[in-house]
Image (cartoon, rainbow, N blue to C red; front, side, top):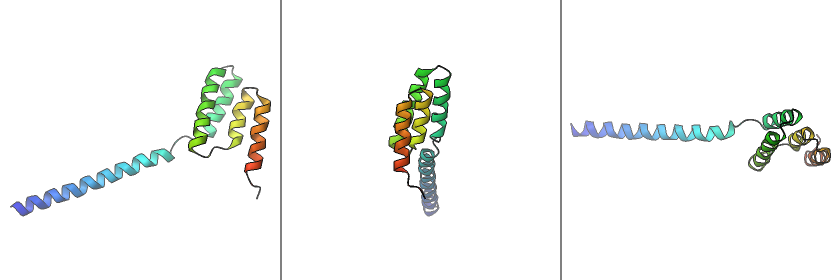
Length: 104
């Protein structure tokens, strides 16, 4: 009777380990499932044009943080600059985008 009980607990441990591993994979998958950078850029642009500049600035700061974590195109940064009517910064961002992206 004891050997059956022991096998049962080993199986439970193995299943528990598998469940933990699946949980880890699911959590790591959510990192890559974050919203695309175009979403905050477009929304920030629309908010700035609607006159809600403080909210557009918050989204711009969020996009800058995302730029550090993930690869965000400079053109997305330029979109919000255009909405905030900061044309010089938008042109500088677009200039950086053309220099950093090789033409194929």
